[in-house]
Length: 81
Picture 1 (cartoon, rainbow, N blue to C red):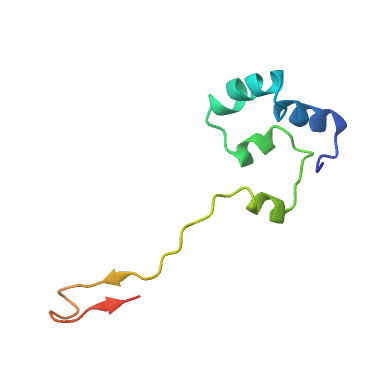
Picture 2: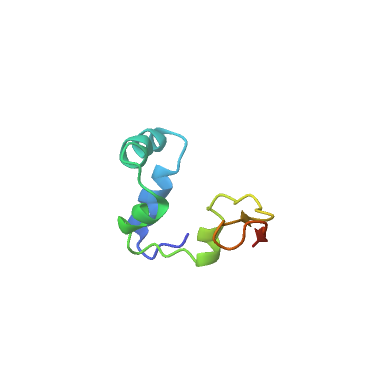
């Protein structure tokens, strides 16, 4: 979808297919531990928009607060950042 080169687009579509492509994906991507960004280096004409790439990132759980204290800052003092 975001590839200028038709050949690269076809290869990526094949890798993402649920047929034979999934086996090759396992050997090519998973066995090497390639990240999505590293995979894109093999397909230079593919330039998905940043918004699309961000949807692929795992969501981070909320971190409501952090507690930091140091005996050097004060013995009876607690800092919340």
